[in-house]
Image 1 (cartoon, rainbow, N blue to C red):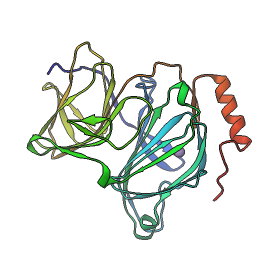
Image 2 (cartoon, rainbow, N blue to C red):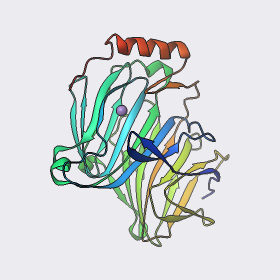
Image 3 (cartoon, helix red, strand yellow):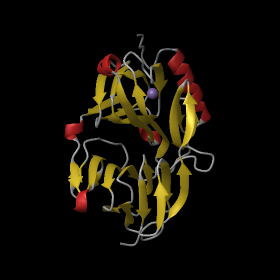
Image 4 (tube, helix red, strand yellow):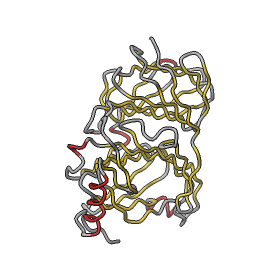
Length: 289
Ligand code: MN
């Protein structure tokens, strides 16, 4: 397989979000987006004592993109202005389309707050094309059991959340063509990942250590951004640590101007002003706890 080369290696840097430390690898000054992927935050693993909520994010709006949560361990409770209530456990994924506007809160689940435990996840922002930015919001609550797992040779595992791999399709419905795969490698096992030539591609290493394309070594937590080199058919990864976890994202680029302000991602400054006005006027709904 002719493999893609690495354009950027981005070590995840720690960001303090109101007392909660998250590891951010996208955006950075160097890489503003990997179209259509705008933001990647890795939270935890936090060891949590009963009664303590490390996230505790109160009601806030979004418009114009899809906030996605991959929960690796622990429990989260989502509530929003469209009366969706989602309880996520380790392995579950929440794929939300903010579209024209939604207000939501994200907190530890009751079980998590009662019992404590380990909380870890990734929040990803996926952009929407201009024509879909104002769609009716949608909430996809995807349970771990509904995510197909592909067993790779020699013991690796790949979960297909969106798109497809090896003939298996992921349950998440998306507005543009993309793949979201959760990979687990044990030491000495490899994965050969075919990627459509037109897609942008990244690998986020949550932890562990891999050898890429039989050549260089990379250690998590870090993000590898790949070049779209010509006829390259994909990438290969070989696990060099006891365990390596990676989130692999590939997607057809949208190719439109991105204007972001806080929780809104639109195409123009005028649309951002409109979003702020619409939020203040209650046009994204009302959600009071
Ligand atoms: Mn949010």
